[in-house]
Image (cartoon, rainbow, N blue to C red):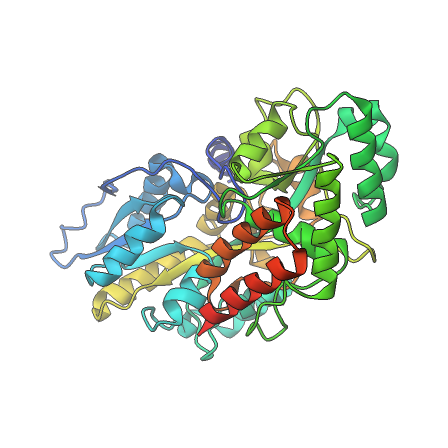
Length: 448
């Protein structure tokens, strides 16, 4: 089992997401592929054919990996044929929207609650998956994170997602560069934390050293990797992005405005740079080639993606805080079913999802292919005994710092655009309070 998982992980790490948590710009594989297995689904004469659309989550964008999983599924369920289409984050949402308008949606879709629950689920397009959330499954997932359970449930109390994996997004620094310039003194290596004041001191030290082109980049050329800039702003002075009920955006609070004003000041002093031309994938590349001293968009998957490019130690860090309480943005990925009105297809889709997520052998392999961590506590350490065991253990230490999963707030798609537009205004020297107020007004209007 461990050897098999290791082989899956190798594929996952090679083809993991470029930009963390919904910001990937991976190239899509167009068209639809049907996995062929040694067991013919036609042999019984009663095959049910379903379609899976998957966003690029680790090796779930790799046809060889997914077809391998389907082959395992067909060993137990030969009468269910699964066709697959691979989406990307550049035009995947447009494809789904077109399919919805044409009433030609896939049966299963693999992504996160911000799409499955607060978007398509809230619009009445998804099947209620409450029957998959058995008492055993709910307890198992709750033991890992109650936030995961809550995120998969709509405002109407119905579950529109059955989760597979999760992660907590963090940031990273160029360790050797920090050490060489003297900036390393401003981080706590034992806890991988730093204060807001020490974050500023580190940026100023890097700037004054003359050894780095760009200490840090607030990328704002699009929505890619926006969880990084959101976490940066919210943590600096303990701000929140939404209210606790997820019914309103709160990014114009005094705490967040103070954070944005600090970043604007650092930009004016050339201790960091607001760049309206860059998204997270661009910032990550600049970090990997040593141009930027840190990245605000990091996780285990990205570390693996850039492993062969870096010539330094990418040192994973928590975001700086003023009170020592870090709240990282989380990523949750799982499966939803579009309600196409065909009971046989819906039942077949549920059968596939349960096999992929819950099977004692397949479940851990499915998780490992994502490059993230299982939502099921009973799966334990799926990387134990693999070459990635130590590396992944480091990223697992960030999971307890996962904050509120506010991605399920309404108007999520619209607010993402408003967020990077606001950052551009702040970077251009606009009044911060006015820019933040405009963001909140636009985003809250989209909730309805």
